[in-house]
Image 1: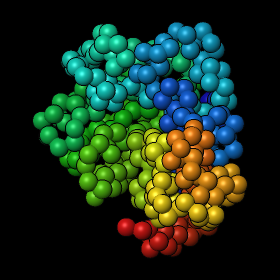
Image 2 (image 1 turned 90 degrees about the vertical axis):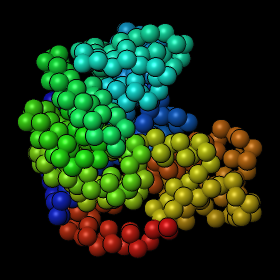
Image 3 (image 1 turned 60 degrees about the vertical axis):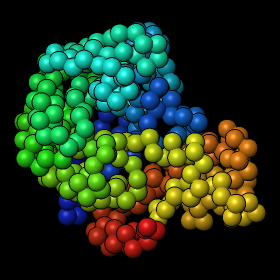
Length: 365
């Protein structure tokens, strides 16, 4: 049910096609984050209209609320959220470590307190696979430990646990209609990253992810580690860089051979009155937009930009109208999907190098 085919390459950058039980995904692809089985402020129809082919939901949050049994009994995530295209679920590992006020990590798993009511719960690799099996997503992630990036001793322990846990996840995973991806860890340390990438690659899973980045490291470190790991991971499997979504970071990672991305950035910025363009972010609450009748992005053809002015969007944001968040979410997601499509076209045409140089020349620093 799963097949990844590389269709075209230019340097390290490549265009591919990922087959899943719920449809084909053109890569490179950006996936909006629907943490609680909902991409905030937009409907499934609106997601489809802006070009979304893959969404992400989160195991930790759905386990706590409404509970994976309820999602299972409602026919799985696709039926529950009325989304017929592919879904990827994170294992919840990052949230266990980042959201919990207190957690106890051991070699078997993690005991943590719910951020909702303080109740105690335990995640093991086997349990997170079982939860994701019941959620019914197309792509599931192995349980991993995502530490802060700069302490070597901490990253050595976390990497060893991550390697042990992915083996346990692989043994526990039995559904043939779900693809299990492993996750590379190792902080900012090139030798640890190389070791982890080789270990994950040798497991021969349907896909491989680069985790533990975009968590406080520098842009230079993000990009150098991404390139290092992507060069080691097998070319015949999709490569997924977790938690990255700025235009500049996406372009850089695509040029290093990464195929899949997710990030809360476009939707979170929209809820905070910020519009994304390929060259900059725009604070739509600024007074300079109060009587500006131009679209948010004069080069964009999304529903927001073809129907409403900057003046109206500013008014909605200042008045805290929900429609403002919806329209800016539509714009931000459309912009990223359109940029990914342009990169795919440029790679196929053998023009990605010149496309990337023009993109970098236009960035407003």
